[in-house]
Structures are given as C-alpha cells and as structure tokens.
Image 1: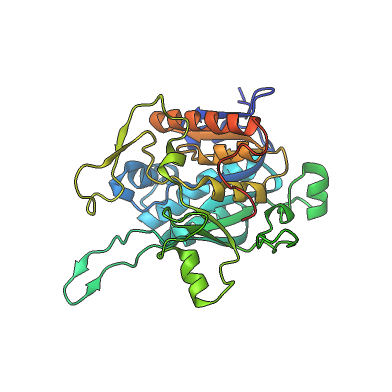
Image 2: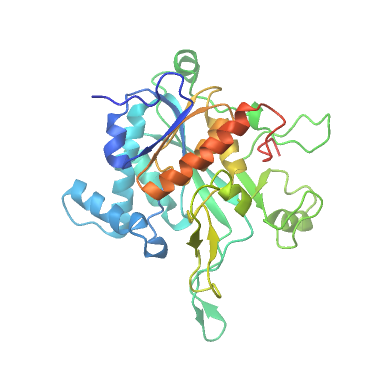
Length: 349
C-alpha cells in the first residue's frame, strides 16, 4: 500500500524509518522540493551511518566490491533515483556535501537522472582543523571553512514555463531571496550562490574578530554583501527539547579538554535554521511540500514551517527522530503565531 507524504490538513511529519526502504513507498510527483544534509561518506567519528552502513548498502545493491568513494556515489544514486520519481517535474534538490566528496555526490545525483544546476557555497569561520601536527610545522589537512551545496533539478518534462504552469515548480524564488543592504529603500541584490555564516560570538552591533564576514570586509568594503547567518547556537539547537534527557556531545574528541558538555540535542551536524530557511525559500513554491530524506534533528523541518511550507522528514535513528519532532513542534508553534514572533532572523539578510 502506497504511503501518503502527509495526511489531510497535516502540516508536517517525521517518519522514523530508513530512507532507502521508505522513499519507494512515496507516490510519484508528490514533493515540491528537497532540502537535505545527508551523510557525507567520510567516516565521521567512525560512525556507521557515515561510512560502514553506506558501503554495505551500496555493495549489496551493486552485487560486487566497491571502493569507499564508489560506494558513496552508488549509494547516492540509489536514493536520488527515488527523488527523481517523487519530486515533481522541475522540482529542485539542495543537498549539502563534504568538499572532498562533492564530486561523488554530484555524480550520484546526475547518474540518477537529475540535472545539476549549480554548486552553492556556505562559508563560515569557525571550523576545527582535523589535522595531525607533524614536525617542521607540517600537517595533514587544512582548516574547514566552507561546505558545498549541490543544486539539482528534476527534468522539467517540457519548458520551465510549462512546468511552472502545471506543477508550480521549475524556477527559483530569486525575488524572495534578495539580499538587502539594510537601507530602507534598497532594492536588494540578486541572490548569489555564496552565503556566509557569522561566528557564534557575533552580536548585532559587533562581529567577532575571527568572523568570516569581518575578514572579508577588512579586505574590501562591501565584499560581504551576500546572504549571511550565524551558526546554530546551543539555544537554537535545543529549542523545544526541554522535556528530553541531556546527553553528552563531543564533536572533536581529540581536541576536547575535560568532560563534554551536556545538550538536549546531541546531533553532531546541526545546520543553522536561517541557512535552511534561505534554501527552503529559494527552491520551494509558496505553500509547497518539502522533503528531507535525512532529517537528523529536524532543522529543515523547522525552516520549512517558519517559511510557511509543509514538511516530510525521514530519519532512521529513533533518538534523532524524537529530537526532530520536539524541535519542529516548537518552531511550528512559533510559525503559527504569525509574523513578528520569530526570534531567528531568517530574512533577506
């Protein structure tokens, strides 16, 4: 029996299930857009979901041995092929990637029948170097300061105008994502394929010296006139999770001193709501249905509800699913209160 994405009058739902087995149950042409932050295939902290499980699923489907990179590409193709079926013609998919695996993700998306439209770049200044310190001032890696976002599209099955007329998909909402210069009469700039994140220590009046925006402005005034937003704070991560137990979060075990701090939302890769709002607003028709097949702790769902979009999330980890439901419940209530009640900026910069 085919599972419906949402029940009648339902604004959002999170399915605790495996994406590879759940996506085939969704009806075709039922989703308007996808905004997702999938596993990167880099064996993050030796977690099975970011390495071993991907390789096992790919090898099983392929029927033969694969390298780690080949497995990640093939695994991407498996779920992306289902996205090409369930997303409406002309619908967009915005998908985060690790820099060194972007080529594999892009190939997997393209091999599934999707069109590659662009690669966006999210810049931030607070990444932690994951490098060995070797004698003579040498190392093994650079400090991460950006993440790519691959922008793909389901073929429009005709012209963009025809897709817009029939499905409401095919185009980007550029007017809704213009970047203003904060002057009341400013018309706003055409959105670029680069967005910046302020440091968590930035305030509305003053930026932290290490902030990416500050460093760009120091090189040339006006250089930072892209969309920007702060990285997710602890308050944002945990909003709506007061009733959940505290857990330890240790993102960088080798660099952490003492006992890891307790949090309500222990997901290791939480994206800022404002970044996900901007992406959701860019690729999803007004009132449309957004899918995140790797829901995690629910940031895309929170962003979708704050932008007035409906949402379906799929997350196989029961603990993360519980956090996602708590967070989306919180932000859905904020959205229902109407304009002026949203503590996140989520605006046009």
